[in-house]
Amino acid sequence: MLTFAAAVFLLIVTPGPGVLTTAGVGAAYGYPIGFRYVLGLFLGTNLVGLAVITGFAAFVLTLPYVRLVLTILSFGYLMYLAAKIAFAGSNLAFIKATREPNVATGVMLQIINPKAYAVNTALYTGFAFYPDNWMIEVGTKIVISNLIWIPIHIAWLWAGVSLTKLSLSAGKQRMINYAMAAALVGVVVLAIIAAQ
Image (cartoon, rainbow, N blue to C red; front, side, top):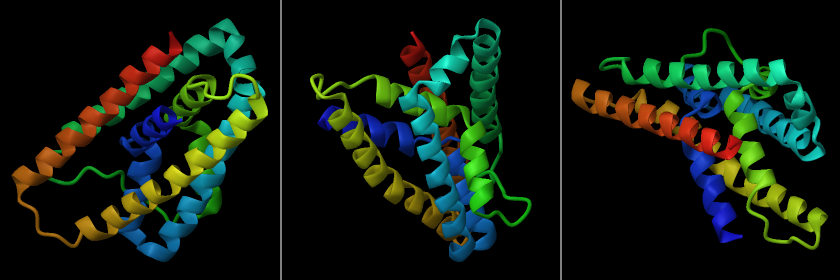
């Protein structure tokens, strides 16, 4: 169970569309709108988790061409995000919100977020710790995942609100960008390993 919790933390804390947009919303709009957006992401990630748990996502992915197209698009999108972050120069490369987001915006992002599917698939199909009772295992995984997911996203929201107020040097901003890009590439590698 501790291994599962560690995997949840590492897979969720790394930069992806959800946490990067959370920081961007925090930077652009502050806490009230940011919390509404995070609520939408929370609902969306649990919908994705439900799709994985029920097998709906697996059913869709059994269609050969759909799986190939979605895999290429998902990994391509994550690598695009990593490159965009790494080569952003001296500006912090949080993905900026262009209009005021709401709960529905957060839900929709998670439904199309390739990292959400990769993470939920890795977590719910691996790390068996109650092999004799699937319901207890899935219920426990849902609780643990959400208990870790919530503070991580609140922290990214705080980071977006806080970092925009700091006067960081160009070099420090580039180092932050490189670290976020490396973490996102790590997510791609973990997703490839999980897909095998």
